[in-house]
Length: 147
Length: 143
Image 1 (tube, each protein chain N blue to C red):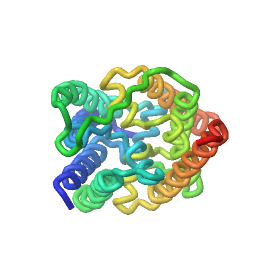
Image 2 (image 1 turned 135 degrees about the vertical axis):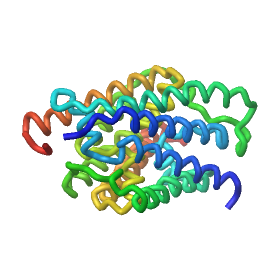
Image 3 (image 1 turned 45 degrees about the horizontal axis):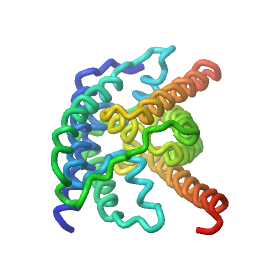
């Protein structure tokens, strides 16, 4: 256990408390947000406003540093072109989000709290994660047989 | 039926924004949950300990919130267990293929005005809305 681990643990815990306060850990709240043509509950749009509002400013301040506190460098995505896996993946994710009422963060937090439905969802999610990693590894091997 | 809760939702969002910024400051990482969690299962990942600590924080806070505020997990609707399993598999596949979820694309990516993340966010909100429309208003389920 190092200070680095404590910091990551604290960030995860703070994230979870934010999710719980915001209503994201309640599947009916999530589905109510996605149900635009029904009794639409716009609350969750405010979650994104709050999170993006804070992070858009804070990240600029943080990135003035040469490096993060516990790592030699920042690990930020650099790609910014659109491709088929991005669209297909996002589309699939949305379907699962609408079906289950959970996205990954709230599912893990709710599973931690002992919700059986969330626990089953996280088991399914883990299967999906491993399936995708295996499939993409096989696809890479077929495309690049030498490596 | 839900109540409109803009103030708690905004406050929760602000906490999420602080948490995401904290992980960037300490580890220089994007706090996308599907990315952090997915990396736990990736072969040869060197930073499993940090990922594990973050996920442990999520789980631990879930337990604590359950003790102090069980209403946070109250829901008038939830998927049946087989549906939850299927939804989970689809979310697992989709987030790894698309490289992110609500946090990685929706919060972190949108915060840096990434085209990929903005398009991904519009896409998953669109298919999420469409799915709920079909389930609720075409099949009349899950009300």
